[in-house]
Length: 392
Image (cartoon, helix red, strand yellow):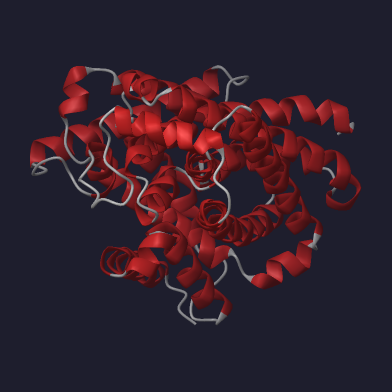
């Protein structure tokens, strides 16, 4: 087994390189997305005994590295793009976030006797991760000081359910298309056509948001890297300082707030490479999550953690698709928004690109980026509210 942290980093970097390469070249892997492929590859290696389930490399990636990645991604967020995302995607995303919060709270009430004293922490983490993606799971978990055993089991369950839900969201719109088509779907498609958007079956263009996540909008120079490093390290240092001074507000919320404020500064917006570098750090972090997801961890903590993840996502699905359909939202928009909640912007992009939903790609990624910010606040809020209810 490879145990040297540097060698483990090399394996994880290789996993991310393979995953992104497969995503770029093959349709099947593009539909899955490099994040999910990387998680599954790293999980396979750890469960096969090639790399360990615990390593100093994972600790670093789950701490400063993912915080830096989150800050860099948030530096790519122009709040105005979220407003321009349109009411339908924003409504769908909001329904999904509410569904995740309700699902995590319901799961806590159902499984508190089985999971124990840290159930309220799991409620916060699953609310956060199923509002804006996997990076939020680590951020909220670190803020709540979740035990290593429960943290690892929660990640393992999250990886499994996220993979299943990606498959479901890829399938649902196709199943609907194979049957009778609802008037709401037809209405939305007509609106897109009248607005002059690209037809779903057409070759996707190169949207600006996609380039900020997968490549730079221009050559990345030394000035860009130096400025980004200074901004990110300063943001991390300041957020930690404020977290120590104002202990009632976790440092991750300071980080989120500071990064979002800096992102609105024109000079910061002109810096190249923030999104792609942040995305890479998040991919490394997610690969380390896969490596930590040793099946034995689930067995050690027990099936209740898996039931927790299933319940949270099931309620999320019922609310976003059930209420969303009642409100007249089309299934394609709901599927992309759900992936923005469950897997983050990369998952929303993967689904929209794989299924040819070109007109939904930009809104999906925009609300996915919003999820990185909202997830932390919502997760910590749910944890604080559910704890006294559970009597913990």
